[in-house]
Length: 417
Image (tube, rainbow, N blue to C red):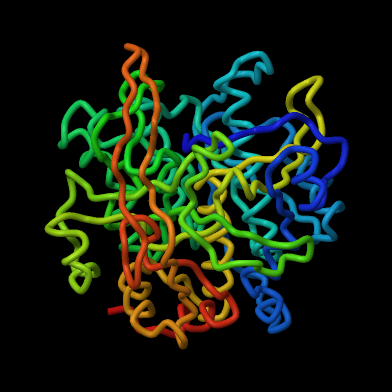
């Protein structure tokens, strides 16, 4: 699971100004994102993701997701929708005292509520798997098999994956490559696959799940060339969602104890053809991310859940776990406009990035994803030097972020070659 912060329970959502005074961080609602990403013109064009399906994959799921989504929708004036739940095996009974289960339930809540908030007309299929995804192979076979089956049955236009494991934690390079069948299937069936780039900047978790690598690393599935890697930005918005400054790379570890946008180069995958024109940045390897959306702790989003007794209510969460389902909503609307699913969109993204004003990709030129100082379990303290944003593609923000009013039609109608 791509980690994210979860704050104390709120009785009701707070406007950004009150989050600042009461909690010391900015917080945002889905309605502020509509303004920030220029989504209203898209909705006014009757694009909501209608007729398209977003598939969300999470271990265990959440036992209260349908109720929680309805309360969330009512709070923000969003249309109701029924989440179709697919159980990929026998899901163990939910235990609200099990931190792994509650963590995944929180992830499920974030994924479903924000995919729906961005694409309120899209169908949402939630795939619950019976084994927790952890560093290395654990949990991945069940997730990939579930995705593969849904694709084979024609279910899903875009798949959002808010999870990842550091490439070095797999038993071998081959063990990672053996898990790719779902992504190959998606490419063959024209299904778009997204993956969060991670929340620890240029580093990521070691096999024990708590220590971090002391060198730059990357994570899978985000690093897979058959996946679109979704990184993180930090937005500075007023209560109405108006930008007060350009977006920067998410990195608030040293200001609010948050995290930083994952990004770097893969040690498993060579540079794909779609990154040929940015080879001076990536070298001979696959670079991530490809595109970025809001993920900062100092800029967290409001979710609603009731799966944990004593904590029922509104919470603030953050991380690239948030960015992936949000971008899935954007892709679903482009699918609706194109009248078909767009499949692997990476070549389209890199072409559109060459035409910023037309393509709706907004360059992010400030910030970095250097991570640290952090202290590992052995008591040693480290800082992993990351990458700095600049003009054009970089390993901190990818190609940048989006202006949806331009990006959705540009993505829908750009040629796929």
